[in-house]
Amino acid sequence: MAGRIRQSDVEEVKARTNIADIVGDYVALKSAGVGSLKGLCPFHDERSPSFHVRPQVGFYHCFGCGESGDVYSFLQKMDHVTFAEAVERLAARVGYTLRYEDGGPAREEAGNRARLLAANAAAEEFFRERLGAADADAGRRFLGERGFDPVAAERFGIGFAPNTWDSLGAHLRGRGFTPEELAASGLVSVGERGSAYDRFRGRVIWPIRDVTGQTVGFGARRLFDDDKGPKYLNTPETAVYHKAQVLYGLDLAKREISRSHRVVVVEGYTDVMACHLAGIGTAVATCGTSFGVDHIKVLRRVLGDDSGLGEVVFTFDPDAAGQKAALRAFGEEQRFTAQTYVAVGPEGLDPCDLRLAQGDAAVRRMVDAKRPLFEFVIRQALGKYDLETVEGRAAALRECAPIVAGIRDPALRPGYTHELARMLGTELSEVQQAVRRAGQSRGGSPAADRSSAPQHRGRADVEPESPVHVPDVSLASLGSDPSTRLEQGALMALLQYPQHVPPERARIVVQAAFANPSLAVVRDAIATSFEAYGATGWVERVAVEVPASFAGLVRQLSVAPVPARDEAGAAVYAASVTANLADRELLRRKADALGRLQRTDPTDSAARAALQRELVAIDSERTALRSE
Image (cartoon, rainbow, N blue to C red; front, side, top):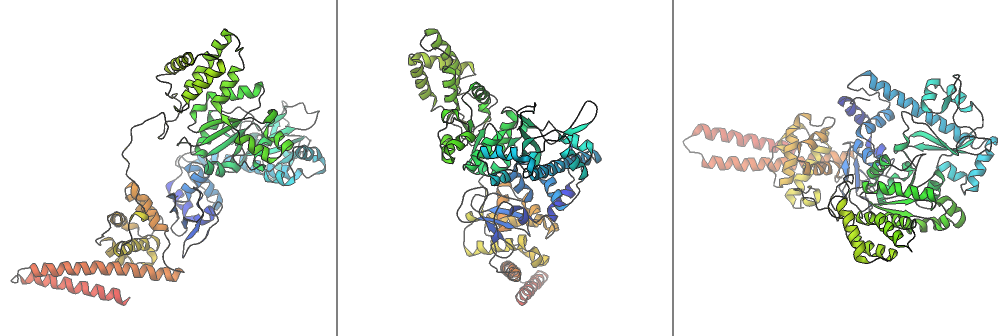
């Protein structure tokens, strides 16, 4: 397992990375004044851009929703990767070799992983090119019969594996990949006699990508009758491909899922394609395995599943296999805090067939007509029993009462208790009693959550103690009186343009008396960090010194645009605003010295002489400021 990345490397990679280049891959940025860029925030819906990026400082901040951070936090939030993964991605981008605290093995593992990803990327390129070859007619026909034209194939990276034994292997060996690397990637298989052959032959190929968009494996569909393999064949488990943790289409859907807090889970590659082409950009699918706990963990990160306001919509076939899949999903349902639903197509059509038969609008209607998952499970359970008999009704009640008791929203539970009584044709009191007993057997009241359910604020059936919360301080909360505007401008100059404010003047600013108490906290943090004034990571040094509720204010001050049109204007502004505040501070010191002089005993000539010298020095500093 890789060790911790050296902190010096973390800082070096950040220093070599222009945050505007990274953010620009996700957000259309335009100039917002000297050294500042802005665009529509990727973290919330807005019509007017309030998302600002300061490349020189290395920070971004949204004045609409408050999201802020550096290039690493941006990638973590946008692509839902770990901090180490964000550093490794940027290091690869700038061509920097990372060092790890525990030495060589970690670098070797990272290098092996990079080679497997490179092999997959080269294989994807090969497959995509071969889709246009003469021997790929069966693959093109397969796609066309399902309503997917060449544009759709290009959008999803669809390819074709030639119906030969070593076309891919020979191609990749010619690209410098070793037999060992090809076997480790799962692209070739090794027979009993040690001979290698392509794993995928004569099949349509879908690249399977992780949440960051890197191709980690492939899914392949059988085309020819003489192919005795499974209908769908996937990459085996490798160092980069773990089927229980991968969702097909998540790289395309993640932004829309994060924005809308909705995900649609379908059953296959063509269903994902059909949904996306029909305008449902949140569709994903598992890859050769059942929907499980690891998939839920991945989706919860992308959904931001902590408010209970999100939606997870499953699509299942109405046949026995679909019902079994629904029951498995329901068994893990309470690992979500989002609400879970089921969408079933008319006449049992899956999204791909429904789009082919009735068009894009029909697919959207299917998803919009979703029903709560627990309602679907209740109806499926009732369908197993003969409700015309007493024995059948009793057995159905025993199975369905725990389902109703497990409904998380207490406002819905009574309604579904009445609905279950109606569907069973049983007295309401009998059903209420059964639901109550089922809830008690689960550990308390029907409102009790399973121990596996994530706890969070805002759930109707959970009332946690409210922690003491200190609201974050922002620029909007500071006020706009002249004194505050001057202090704010001076701090912006120190954070954004230290190269234009000499340390001598900056020291006067950070030693000055501030009228605004919030800005005084930032001033004190700058004073504490002054030995790093203007150095790489300067703003970060200041941000870590302030209390947590003031960190956002530091970032806002570091990205808020200054009233200047170009770099020369910014230099003039930084010099002017800090000179004005320094002059205000020197004037305050002069008034204080004069007061002390008036209070000094007239006979104490030494003390009075010292104060006179102090007044002369202050006047000299003020004169020097005004002459600059």
